[in-house]
Amino acid sequence: MVNYTEVKIQLKPGSERDLLIAALAEEGFEGFEESEEMLLAFIPETDFNPESLEALVKAVPAEYTVGTIRQQNWNALWEANFDPVQVGTFCHIRAQFHPPAEGVEHEIVITPKMSFGTGHHATTYLMIETMQELDLAGKTVLDFGTGTGVLAILAEKRGADSVDAIDLDEWSIVNARENFCINQAKNIHLHQADCISLQQVYDIILANINRNVILENLSSMRSHVAADGVVLLSGLLTSDCNEVVEAAAAAGFTLTGLQERGGWIALKLAVRQY
Image (tube, rainbow, N blue to C red; front, top):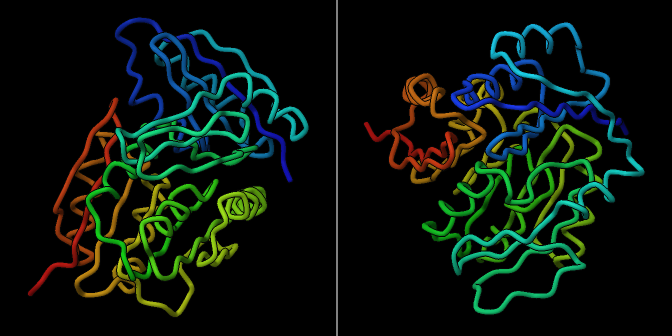
């Protein structure tokens, strides 16, 4: 288990927000929370490099502060700032201390701790929004980089027959397992791994990670998705679009859908038919 370093960056109007987030992601930052004037960025304490951060933020320029989020106070910080997330009438994501929603198709209860994926970030929202378009009934699904497990839970709620959820981070594994239990998931199989090593072909692959991990694993995704399958990708900035689409094409995919929200994108891929 590791603590996280939290960086609070005060953004000025006109700041190159997307480029800064992309640069921070390259340095290993795993989670972001955005407001009009503030960017919060989170990185495992062991991966934090103060000199690299100083160089990145100096180029913006912007003022920032650095703090530590310890395991024992993560929940207190989260609860103080967490509001339920609703994706139309399709999906409502809340904590256990929030009342249930009315008039929604699916409700998911999440306790994120040090895992990211509550629906607040645009990429998770985009993945959920795009999953609404998919027929998951009876399908096999891979959630690559499951985090809190929210997408795996939604896949099962939408009728997936079997879901494999993988993540490298030990804290995410512990947290996802807890969330699967809270949501009474029965068909989700959790694995700790940094790549798709399971000998399985999936109808649908979900990957809300980051550009570098996606680029490194596109060929593997192609090997593990059915000929008529679908791959949903996010964790990507609008500036990543061309590079990822070109790499996906080289791996044997065709772009069939694109959603955008607040400078972030989700891509829907199909296997290219020759």
